[in-house]
Length: 378
Ligand code: T4K
Image (cartoon, rainbow, N blue to C red; front, side, top):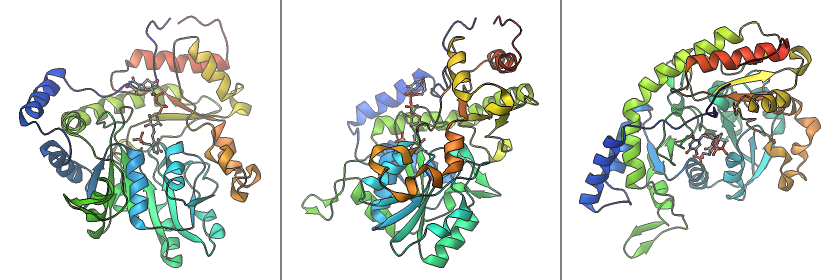
């Protein structure tokens, strides 16, 4: 029996002494938020790590996306995916924009670029794609559609810290890309987010939007929010960034253990199967086809709990099934067959650097034995 509960992830935590020393520096400076030194330093380092021209930091990924969309001044409809975390859609809601749900590609689980064009109307102002679990969207196709119809392209890149498409950093595609630095992400600032964007002109607007629209002691230029990253978050980020590459190396090894032990199990597909150097290594996700595997995803999810293993059914329920979207024509289940299939098959497995390879082997063995029960003892 696995003694301690095994969660889907654990936060990447630097040596506490490193954090203590950063905290002393912040305490001595008495500057704890509002564009402090650590914030400026982290923004600079992340701009370089993510290989983007412009980057703005936020208190979380959701506010980065929400205010990024606000900065674009959009009105009307936005074509997006139902298979995502609620935050993607909520960023549209808070901007008064109407989502138009587009079905997903069954392999990548991202918005199906071939189905976007038929959803465009006079009201469409943007396409909001999500690079789900680190698999990149079809950025070239999406860009061509956007140019043809004069639409903005926004990416929710909460899962793609450090991903590349070919040799190009993922944050360089579209008009903007949001990154989440939540505790559960490969790179974290406890809570936090970043927005990479095209065009220097947006920088000033974003700086205003995340600081109540305040331009100076006696000047408020627009209606914003408080969405600033503070010095403590930034300090954690500066230390976590130093250990991200080591974490990636450990995760590559864990990914390999999963891959070699899951190979050949009929009915299990690895969703996050990109080569290591293109992969954000943030999640290890499988899809269980009940017909071929013999057991449903929900059955596996529940059964693993008996062995102290806590997987997650991301992103169940589908966003198109939220009560407040049910009236939308594009939210009807018959229009989103692939999304409805995926949401019942996908399972995020435990995946983090400290996870012991032996435990991963045990989890895989369970998946083998669930299919062919022979008296399980772990
Ligand atoms: N867009 C997409 C596509 C996203 O996936 C997300 C966030 C966003 C936008 C929004 O970005 P942020 O505003 O969050 O920056 C988690 C995260 O809270 C959320 O950030 C993330 N996506 C989502 C996929 O996962 P939950 O509800 O699963 O979190 P929770 O608390 O159940 O944590 C999962 C496991 O992690 C726990 O079982 C144990 C472990 N854990 C968690 C925390 C918080 C720890 O060991 N320590 C911890 O401190 O949402």
